Figure 1: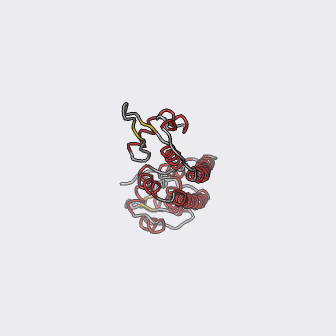
Figure 2: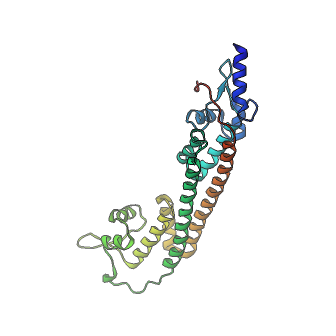
Figure 3: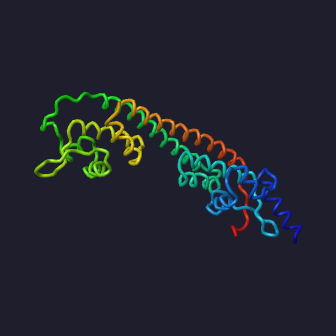
Length: 259
C-alpha cells in the first residue's frame, strides 16, 4: 500500500518538473510566509498540493511559479484581478482565457497612461490661465459648472465638503457660486481625479496649489503618478514571465484539501 502511494506521488510530482518541495521551500522562493502559501492554495491561486502518507503537503515548481506570478500581478493589477488570472492558468491551461485576462490588464494600464498624459497637458494649460478682474456675473452655479465639467452636481458638493474646491456662497440664498479661480481649481481637481488621484491625496495637495506655484506642484504630482504606473507595468511584465513558466509545466492532479 505504502509503495503504491509513493508511486502515485512520484507520478504527480514528475509532472511538475521539480523535486519535492515543502511549504517552507515555496515560501522562501516566492517571498511569502508559510501561512500565506497555504492561504494561496486554499484560494485556488496555487493548485492543490500532493500529500505524503502522513499528510504533509508536497509542492512542485508550478506552485512556486504560480506564487511568483500572483505576487507580481497583484502589484500590477490588484489582488482580485491577480487571483482571477492565476486561477485561470490552472482551470484553462490550454485556452485563450489567460491571455485575454492579461491583455485586459495591460489595456487598463494603457488607458491610465492615456488619461495621465491628457491630465498633464490639461493641468499645465489650466494652471497657467490668467485671471483678470472678476465680476459677479463671471461666477457659475453648481449646476452650470457641473455641466461644463461633465460631472454630477453631487460631485462638486462632495469636493466642497472635502475642502478641495470651496466656492463662495450667495449672501441671500446661500447657494454656491464658483468664481473663475474656483472654476480653475475644479478643472484641475477633475483632471487629477481622472488621472487616478484619490481624495485624500488631493486634500493634501490642493492647499499647496492655492498658495504656491501651481504648474510645478501639479507636474510633480503627476510625475509621481507616472512613476507608479511604470512600477505596475513592470510588475505585469514580471507576472507574465512567471505565468509563462507555470503554463509550461503540467498542472498536477492534486491531493486533498488544506487541514
